[in-house]
Amino acid sequence: MQKNLKKIVLVAALVAVLLVSACGTGEPQEPTPDINVIRTEAVQTAMVEMTVQAALSPSETPLPPTLTPLPTATLNTDATQPPAGSSSSSSGSGSSSGGTSGTAIPTWTPDVYKCEFVDQDPWDKPQMTGWMYDVVWTMRNVGIATWTVADYYVKWTGGDDLSPKHIYKLPHDVAPYQTVEIGVDINIPTHPIESPGYSTNWAIINDNGDEICVFFHNIPHTYPPPTATP
Image (cartoon, rainbow, N blue to C red; front, side, top):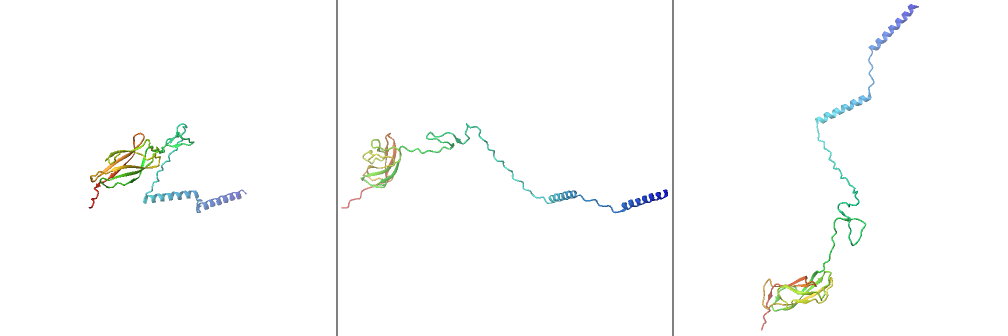
């Protein structure tokens, strides 16, 4: 009985040795590949290839434009001090609830004494020697003061003295934007004169004695009257 047990143990040991020998001489099993390792190696390989290509064929890469920072708005916290460029004052002729611009708006101030030339008869031209006529200027009052007959008049102010009188009255009062015809007697000397001829100057005098409207009459030259045919 004891001998049989030894045989069984011996056979079992032999079988174990054979199995171990068979396992050691067989083909080794390949380990299961790690997907994450494969991905990492692929990415590293691609990066190496891109670096090599960039080194072999460098290209200019445009730099991005420099950004200019926008200005920062500031809040005026001082309620008593208005911001620059504005005014808190208002005109004495009216009131307004809003602010006004810092640029002053020009206001029109009408002229108290001012005239405007309208017409003349006759016009400036050569005249015959010894000729006597009236030259009439039509003037318009474009000021705001009325030209009154009692205080305003027409006066010779210089140039050639061609009139028998040096002062003439206005024919009527002249309110603003009304016209008046101012007539002056002209006497042409009897001797002929060449260019530049004659020039006589006149003006309207206001109640302060100032010349407020100046006008003149020019005669380029004079010529003798035609000779009578017998």
